[in-house]
Image 1 (cartoon, rainbow, N blue to C red):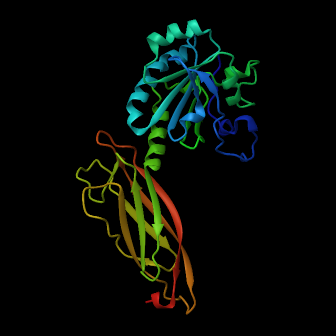
Image 2 (cartoon, rainbow, N blue to C red; image 1 turned 180 degrees about the horizontal axis):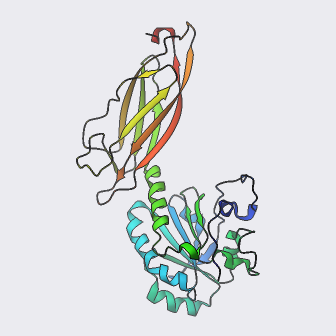
Length: 302
């Protein structure tokens, strides 16, 4: 079986692919309802609210076989972060798959059976593996990351030239996405205060390193703001080694000297760098850029 590398057009799914930028860059993951190995059935849409790592497999696929144990490791490692690992077996008799799954698939992995390939078919990009008459086989050994809103954030078609059975690249991307997901950053600009406030809302069970973390290997929280004609002072960070729940960082500024008697505005770009952690491990460092509009009155000018 020839494996294809990842292309940008993989994300277009049933929309097709061309040299132009796709109209829908982050499509919703097609829903399916499939029987679970443990009994009952699973609708992918029932996992909304959780991050989902979706992987297509078959017991006869040697590439897939070398990945199975590592999928269990991922399921265990990321369980406390609310990640669900869903393993979809393609077009195998139930007895054959169950015998394999019993000895190879971790109990922490959600295993389902796509016996006729109809679910896999919905995920097959139309221009990938053009020699495959059975289009459901195009996504065999493919890996996707689906966010809590059901949107595909990563779609990796198999690539034998860069085969990665331990999912190093997938784990790195999952860490990056989770770090952004567990910390929500908002900007507030109270009227006539000459202060811009960056509010970091941290998900329960997590914390972010403060601007003065206790160990040198930790990434400190840093916030920088830039706007034309506006002078920003040193940020005022909350005290402590870590920030939990809600942290507010104040960025004092001096309004533009050329602001007229009428209200003036400037667009400000704020860069926020931080590292989110649980009690046992830290996520990848994250750097985010957000913008807002500062409005000045005549009394704000120096």
